[in-house]
Length: 190
Image 1: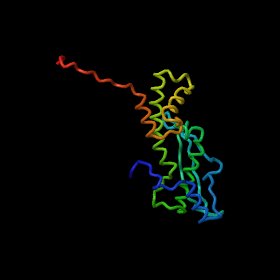
Image 2: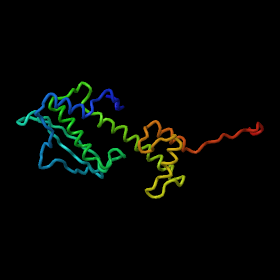
Image 3: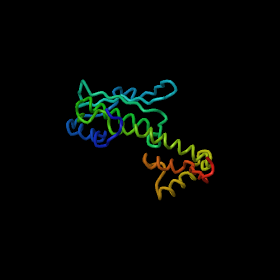
Image 4: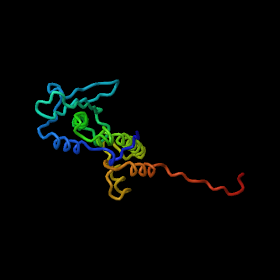
């Protein structure tokens, strides 16, 4: 299976919820254990928020679909930071709906939200590399990165550093690389 995200290939959770509600109007999405709607787990140095959700097809469903998901804490990029619990919950709901056989799985179990996280890691890596270059140039002072943001906006003709796509960030990183100059030989140096 390819690790590249293709929005045409995956259902997003919102679509899965619509499918679920159409098939099971009396259904509901809830924590599998309402007394423990989520857990905090630590694996090595990394902390995760873990959610186990249940998709009940009816109020008396004895075998609801169960879906599990986890999200690293703190979030690794601007899109997941401060939304870790919500992201884990949404992913768990999508998986629970699939487990209840209430959503199309011909295009895969992983939701669009989950698979886009693969690209998020690359974006974060690029932003860190750009941040390091900006620090070398003295554009960052503590947590104040206004000079970097202003430079990026000027270079990209109005773009926003925090929401830039991978291609734009790669091009900007290349722009920040020191320019190499070629020495000309005067013909006598051999």
